[in-house]
Image 1 (tube, rainbow, N blue to C red):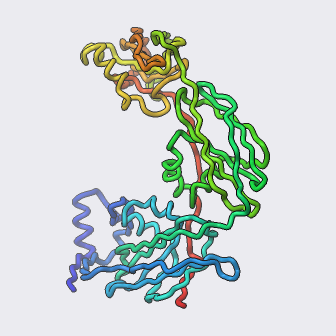
Image 2: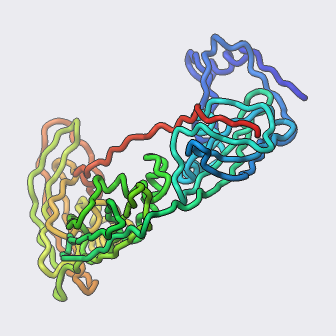
Image 3: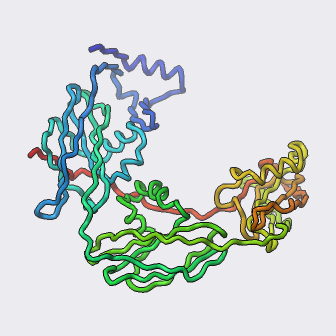
Length: 432
């Protein structure tokens, strides 16, 4: 074993040549997580060498409910010679999957798990979970191995799926589409006699899985049923009619319906497919542009209001403003057409427009601009390129230079959630 020691005085001198009067030293890992120390409390920095793999090899042996109805997970853990101890956790697989690197997973287990074990287990029973495991749901066992210096070195993981629940009867919900428009649809839901209650949630076609992957670790969803129950907002027990609005024309949607049996178990998910009506006509798609107010200040930025009004032949349209000088320098209409037709330039809530758009663009005072818009008809044919030249008025104070192509200052609504606690200090591991 080799040891390399740097005494604190040397470290302080070296750091002092790099930054002015530092008083902290930070050790930062690849996830940007760090551990910090006050320099005046350090004696030395020591570099050690550990030879050999440090790992607590994990094997899943089984799952059951004990006599009290509590969850019991059986496993074995075998340490390598250089592994002095390990921590272990059991979480829904959806939460563990959110940690895409070994380092981020080690950090998660290290900060949310209490006890460290310093022995091997050939037939351990893991109990004391602060959540109840759900039927037919995937979970993950994870160990983090520590060397003789208490350094987290590696993880070992084993996934398993709990048995399916015994569903009473065949709880399900029959759905019917009552009405569709370009921006809405209304549905009717009828539960059968085995369905005590049910939940509904609407997604873009094929988006439910990606939504689950995105939000499962944030909200603590163990399975898709958890997400539908949460996002539904309320449950229904009888025949119910529900309408979704502010949707996109000619777009496929899915409504997930979660039936519940009399024991509160999740029944088989029902997925309904609905398509909103197409918008526009077969004629020429045209957009009218109206220049509105100019305002703002040097501190918060200046803005220009522009209203874009499509005719009844427009299926969707796109809009923009650009400085006239830049428009001419970049090649004129050919540049604008390429920009408007490129899908990558029009992602997000202000990409394609389907009705009158009152846009608030950032803009520079006393500057010539051109507003553009162009739409497609129902056949996917691009219409005429609409344009309107204007000049922003001069303003007192130092002008704030905006982007060459205007960016929106409209603020979309924010979604706010809460992060659930995932601390598992009560879990116990016992050799049987």
